[in-house]
Every structure is written in C-alpha cells, then in structure tokens.
Amino acid sequence: MTDGKSRPRTADHATGVIVLGAGPAGLVLGNILLDHGIDCVVLERAERAHVETRARAGFLAANTVQILDEHGLAEGLHRRGRMHGTCEFRTGDGRFRLDYSGLGRKELHTVYPQQDLVCDLLTRFLARGGQLRFATEALAVRDADSERPAVAVREADGRPAVWRARYVAGCDGRHGAARRSLPAGTVRHHRDHGVTWLGLLAQAPPSMDAVGYAVHERGFAGHMARTSEVTRYYLQCERGTTADAWAEERIWDELERRMRAREYGPLRRGPILQRSVVDLESDVLEPLRHGALFLAGDAAGLISPSAAKGANLAVLEAALLARALIDALTSRDSAGLDAYSARCLTHIWRAQEFSHWMIGLLHGPSGRDGESLFHNSLRRSRLASLRTSRSQQDWFAEHYVGV
Ligand code: APR
Image (cartoon, rainbow, N blue to C red; front, side, top):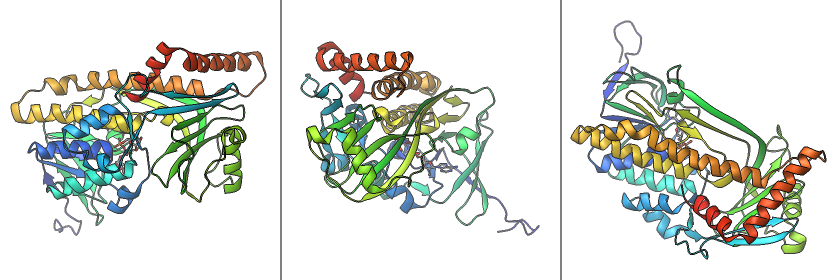
C-alpha cells in the first residue's frame, strides 16, 4: 500500500491492550486478558522458533505455580515439571543440605525449563485465537499520557505501522521499546554486583538431587537441574571473559574442583550445548506506570540470577497487571491500575534484597588484605548460621521459595 507519494503507507491497527514482548510476562498477561474477553495483541520482535527455543530460567516458585494454576496455564508444568525441595552448599567447612521441604514448608520449587513454559503459553494463546505478531518490532511508545497511546512498529515485511490501544503493557525486557519510551523523570535504581558468571547448559543428567552452590576460594560454581538429561551450571569468572574462552575440559575440571568432586563424587559430564556470560547486575525502575503504559518483567526491573527470581517476578507482575486492566476495561474501576506500581515494587524489592543477600553469601573477594579476609569470614559465619540455626533456615526457605 502506498499513500500516493510512493512511500509505504503506515498501516493503522487498533485494539484494547497492546502487549510488547512474548516472554513469560507478555504471554501470561496475554493469556489472562484473552480469557477475560479483552481485545489485545502481542507484538514480538523475534521469530516464533527463537522464542520457543530460547533457554532461560527454569525454577518456578510455589506461588508462581499457583498463579499459573489459577489461570489454567500450568498443565504442562504439572505433567513434565519436577518438584525440588533441597539445596546443597559445599564450602571449605564441609557440605550441608538444606531440605526446605523438611522444614515443614509445603511450598517447593518446580523445575521446568522456561522455554517449555513459554511454548505452553504461546500454544495456548494462539489456540484460543490470541493475536500475536512475530518478527514485529516495537520502535517507540507514544502518547502514553493520552487515552489512545500509540506504538510505532516495524512489521515483519519491514513496513512501518502504528498500533493504537487504550493501554500498553511493556513486557519487552530490559532493552525493549517500553523502556526507551519512558519519560525523563523515571527513576532507575541500579547495582552492578561486580560478579560475572559463565552460564552453561550441558547435555548431561544432574550430578546431584539438589540445587548445588559451591562456595570456593577460586570462585562460585552452581548446579541446577533442568531436565533428567540437561543440567545448568554456572562458573564465576573474571569480568570480560568471553563465552568461548574456556575449553570444555577446563570447564568440567574447574567445576569439579569448586564442587569438591574428590570428596563428594564426580560430576556427570556431557557436551556443552549453550554458553553465555552474564555480568550480575540489578535494576529497578520507578514508577512502573506512565499514564497508559505499564511495565512488567525485565522491562520493570532486572534481577540477578543468584536466586532464580526473574521469571517468577515476571509472572507475578503480569498477573497483577492483568487483573488491574480487566477491572479498568470491564468495570471502569482503575484502582488496580493506580496501585499497580506500588504493589509490584513491594514484591520486587523483597526479591532484590534476597538475591543481593545470596550474592554476598556465594561470592567474596579473593584478596588477602584485611578487608577481604573480614568479608570472607562474615560469609563463613553466615553459612554456619544457615547450617545450624533453624530460624535462619526458616527465613532462607521463606525467601528462597517465595516471591
Ligand atoms: N519489540 C517487540 N518485542 C521485543 C522488543 C521490541 N522492541 N524488544 C524485546 N522484545 C521481546 C523479546 O524478543 C522477548 O521475547 O520481548 C520479550 C521479553 O521477554 P523476556 O526477556 O523473557 O522478559 P520477561 O517476559 O520480562 O521475563 C523475564 O524471564 O527470561 C527469564 O529470568 C529471566 O528475568 C527474566 C524473566
């Protein structure tokens, strides 16, 4: 189509809610809106195949499962997910297991690869007639302070288009268009934790029946099962390390060294399928609402993977936003929308605080100066409390499993 001046005419679309991004936040939100008859569209920059195969997190907290259950979105995770109730710390002072299911807590984690959850959400949304445009990149959100905000997009065929709606949900992550379109006054809390992890996905069965945290003078190492054949490992490395810097042999040897394989048994090795380097950082935007534009998931705030809270916060925020949008659009009750930002920030900061505590527990300076020695002695004391104090274990379990 052209507008007579041989420029492609901008296609115009309209709907009730535009959801930017088909990750956990966007797809949970889209499914709940669709189930309540709200006219919405999900605009996703990537192709479907990329969205469905992107390996990310895989640790669902009990109340995340409850939210998914409430909205009929948990069928896949109940069928293929596996319950987890134990984490194992390996330190210079020995090994101890924290069986939080044994602490009288009925809530456990469900281990379920995020790409499987995203596939479930995507399939269900489309099967129920949901509107989802792949390879459609949001470029900017405009007129957010009006009642007809607009999203400028580049469509799959490269043509420009504009989508208009009553509300826009920015679920397009930390680099998405929603964040780029925020007004100057938005506050961004930010912390670079100064730690870098080499993230590995190995074609190998889990090496233990727990989430493993190795606290070692050479650096942190982590072990998280994903399925019975695939295991996620993390190796703390120098800032600036590239994903392919370490040969596989060296990776496994270093993992075994830090996991103290000599005392506790070898790791089950296999080909490394995926590698990524992540600098642990966190940020939180405030407020999470700007007129008709709302942020959820990583677009609202980034949390380090140290306590596996990211996807769980994304699902919680999506459910809170869905409820508020439905009330506003079906009964003209905007109380939920007015309270959205404050409600989410309470949960976000609690999750940030625990993730920050975990980073301090698992990582420390390698120097022999007084400051480093003091810091590392504090960590040893915290670990000893976690091993011996029931009240410390209860506090840990409440924050570790909850969001
Ligand atoms: N236009 C459209 N889509 C976009 C754009 C854009 N400009 N930019 C990003 N996207 C898409 C990405 O391709 C991705 O599919 O937005 C989606 C964002 O998904 P996630 O990054 O998974 O973010 P979110 O849904 O907030 O989930 C966050 O899940 O991945 C885990 O633990 C991780 O904390 C993270 C959590």
